[in-house]
Length: 264
Image 1 (cartoon, rainbow, N blue to C red):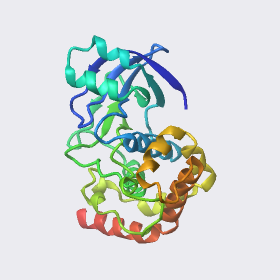
Image 2 (image 1 turned 135 degrees about the horizontal axis):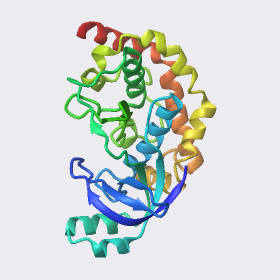
Image 3 (image 1 turned 90 degrees about the vertical axis):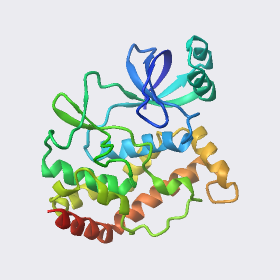
């Protein structure tokens, strides 16, 4: 994963609760920056890296994710006190995604996707526990006539109150039943084996290797008496969680298929 330095704060994106921003990097690229000082904290940034990395391993389209160094001095040029506070609270390492210039929000009433794509996306969102892909907020963009996945900060719901223990890995993910593309996910059985096969432990370890030690240490500080004592142990806990979830997928896949038939 590349690391950039933020050179300029361009504009806030007030649609999101965490108030991300469009910024310019020292590589002259334009990015959507997620702030570690926002209300969701560092776990939301970890979710972006982990869920985004898994999506890419599954062949799903995700904008490039980079680490972004932010100088708190940038707050001096911003007139909005709320933005000033957010920039200062996010000094150091943050996460940003490539800005898809000209992209439009996905409209389920107009935009068409294949049942194969819908099935792959629903399978992925169930695996990573993504609560944020409903018709109210699809977190999909249409860019160059293709759907792109964005904003996975609300995924990995399990890691907001965990100590590294894998609990009920086969449990169906109830929020998925509000998924914007659930009714079109009619090829789940066809894509399941392929997708599971793409996420061998070595692939998951490669995804987790992109999470900075300082993010893991900050997140683990809430459970100092648990097993997440080192970054390596913390990464292994995520790998164990996803490995167990994949191994137990027959249960949550059956629930998904039943829900799809109910929508048909």
